[in-house]
Length: 189
Image (cartoon, rainbow, N blue to C red):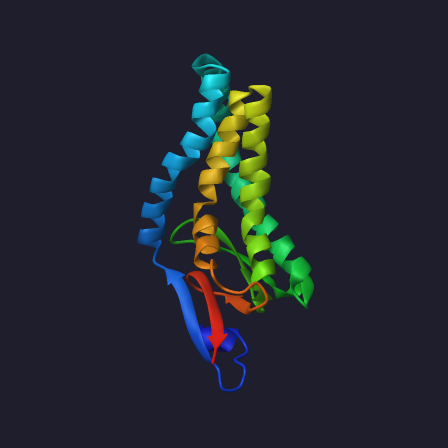
């Protein structure tokens, strides 16, 4: 597949890639676990206690395969439905699939979106599956819900990296989801 075929290039514009290799993404994702735990796990232990967390974590671990498989699908659906809401062709612009070499499901928007809409779609799994359950688990003292939130916050590391890559680009500029790599494309003068 040719990247240029995937997007419409405005006249007199050139395409700039904002991408990152999967090795670097994975390294950053591992490092992101430190602040994620500092923001979620440490306050939980201070407010509640380790035993409360441990009981919930064990419950979470009992169903980890279901959470991974179902969560990966829901994660991509959240991207797709959100981007589809903002795409001019709706869900017809959304492609779901699996990268079999990595055993990773993916969602790809085939049309350019405004940065602000791309950000919302990029952040949706982090918010719905990560941040909200983490806050609920912390408030009610449920280590299983907190573990779910921690895991899916961490699972959204690639999304957090993409959101960081969008930092500094005007929200009303259009970007295209990169069809093959982690990142996006932008047409500039």
